[in-house]
Image (cartoon, rainbow, N blue to C red; front, side):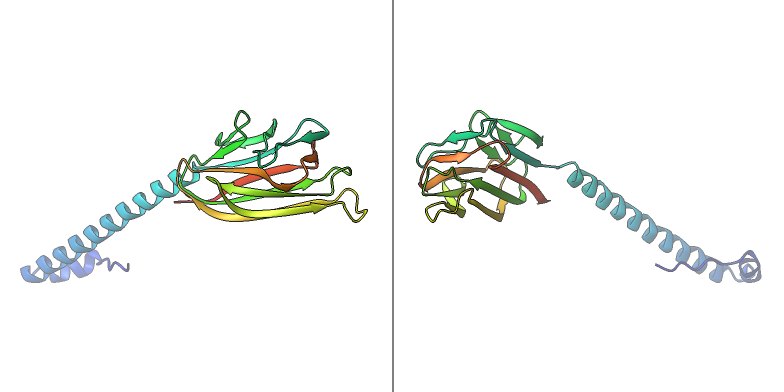
Length: 187
């Protein structure tokens, strides 16, 4: 907004005309009122931005064992949590619970053991598959990895986990099988 500031000389020159001075005062009062409203709106926007910045959520989890047996159709219970900002991931349940509503990204990497023919793994949201990956060592392709990712909106309290969907149950742990998620944008 452009605000016209009158010089003292101009105000004095018009001081002999009371109507002109009154009009000038009213214009300046209106401009001040508009600026005050604009500053208040900017303060509100700044407070909302700061509040949204405080909603950081990110985690990466893995297994401590070098080889892991997972249950058929079972949730992966990752037990090493190097990073868990927002405390959304639970090692007790193997489930991530969204602490805030917003858009999240999830990534899973798996490596099948050589004694399994294949494994299919899903990222589930409250029991519904969002994405799946597959690792296959049946063609003498040892150390086969699978990876998938998904972007999804979660409402606060909704849950996401990784589970075995089909095939074998033996995977390599440690750094070879990981689950990562982060809040891309809070509502």
